[in-house]
Image 1 (cartoon, rainbow, N blue to C red):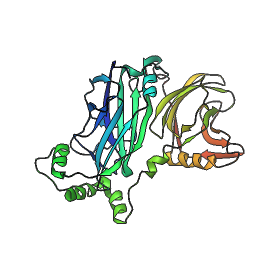
Image 2 (cartoon, helix red, strand yellow):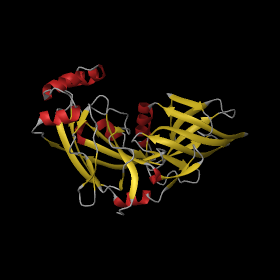
Image 3 (cartoon, rainbow, N blue to C red):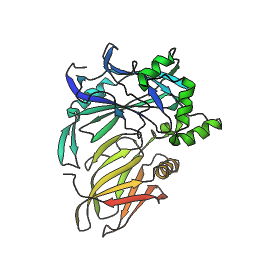
Image 4 (cartoon, rainbow, N blue to C red):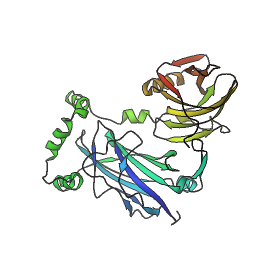
Amino acid sequence: MSNKEYKYHVNLGAAVAYEVLYDFDSNYLTDEQGNVLLPFAVFGGSPTEQWGMGQQATAVSERNPLPSGIKVKWFSVTENQFWEGEYRFNQQFLENLTHYTIDALLTRSQEKFTEYMGIIVYAVPGGLVTVWIRGGHGSEQFLLAQFQAKKVEEPNWDYFSQRVLKRQKTISREDYIKEVLSRPTMQQTAKELAEGKKPSSEYWQQLMKTYPWQLTLSEGFTLKGYSTWYQNGEKYYTYQQDNQLAKNRPVPRDFTFYFEGNGHTLQRFDFIPDAEEIKQAFAEIALTSPLEAPIDLHLEISKDIKQLDAFLIKGDTKIELKNIKVRRVRLYIH
């Protein structure tokens, strides 16, 4: 990798109902030799955030060469388990991003991906670590890594907890777990633990599933492009000229799409499906014949653009998405 420096920061995240404490000393991006390039940490407790997001863990003004890898260590409160893992990034993928320019539909501007970047690190139960890289002031976000950490132990809980929690008085490992599980946000998790259910990464692994699918509109309308948040935490544009079936993609979480036709000039709509309904619909229709056929996420729009219905279609199978939110919004952000 080049020694050229780029402006980027690191964010740390964890699921709301599965709190984690990231080690103060053992989390960092690495250089080509595996040495510390950029340490990252958060203080005061778990950085609970939405999947694919995180709390600031380094200075936003940081400038460094692109990282070669990552080292992560954390304590999973609900599992009463320390985890540690490391991973070497795909160097060609990072190099390609240094030459990538985003044609931002929302702002009608072009942005270099490397103009302002962030790396998001997210740990969940079962030792699963997911890393994304965000660029162009947040307009696109790609999966950079996902890897399995291994179970480890921490010989000095008092030192670990004081560094992370920044409390005047130490708290035992057992008492801290009890404190966390007594919080209102943890009631469901505490109940599951009491019933003997063990936390796992299964839910998040399901979000990583991909399918051959394309967005289509009813007759007379032309799709001009769309910006999508995917359930695997990625976010990027699909342009009018793109082959939507060039690669399998995750299930969409929501998207903004542009279209025209049937006497209407360019329009912009937001489409927000129910996360579980659309995930289950994709899984169901993927198993129907013909198995190799692509899936159409088809939006049936009335000619006066006052009504929109959504369906997944493959072959003779058609599944309606009943729990959707659609809104017409201002064409551009600015």
